[in-house]
Image 1 (cartoon, rainbow, N blue to C red):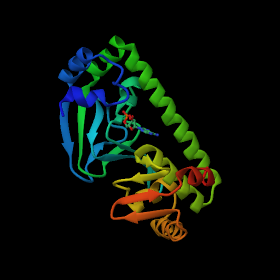
Image 2: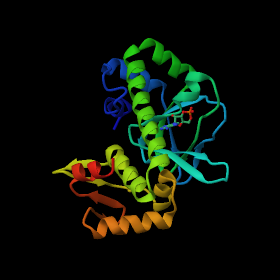
Image 3: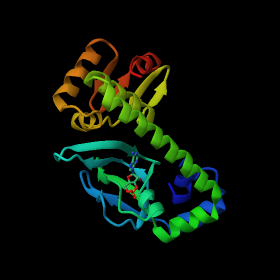
Length: 226
Ligand code: CMP
């Protein structure tokens, strides 16, 4: 797939003409990362913007006692690295590659120029930043209010919405994250995640096969956990 074809499929760019996408694509450089590789380090100066073409990454911070807290998992078509370019502060979080990942990058100067030249992109960014803020608000609420089983259920709903595909009411998440990563999103232990997933599976809410997780009757599941 060419860079332009790929950009056509990315929500923040999809409204732009092919000619505009071609100009943007010419400025983009491809990079790839190994599984587990650190892509961005919290507090480092921000010079680059990233759009993911394949793979998945986690957005993390370290708690005071050294535990990894996962703020979000991003996949194909998602972007990251915009915050420090916009506010001039250091990177707000670490970005770590979960699988082998490929990205297209823009320099800070090109990113800012594109935002100024194409207001449609700026508006799409604001929409996505609003969505992320909403999710963070929900995550804060869930971490402070709910018990561990409920927090894990809420993380599953979020992953299903972000990474899953729905078919006949069931959601399938391919490349389901590691149990430790689910635990670090839900603020609990890997053992609790393992137990909760087994109970949910035993009760017929979901099924796992290798790295694929299917949630049955997602509507019901979502209502149950939100
Ligand atoms: P930046 O601060 O430049 O580098 C880290 C990136 O992580 C940040 O830009 C965002 O792109 C991304 N990021 C930070 N917080 C979140 C979040 N809560 N949800 C999704 N992405 C985030």
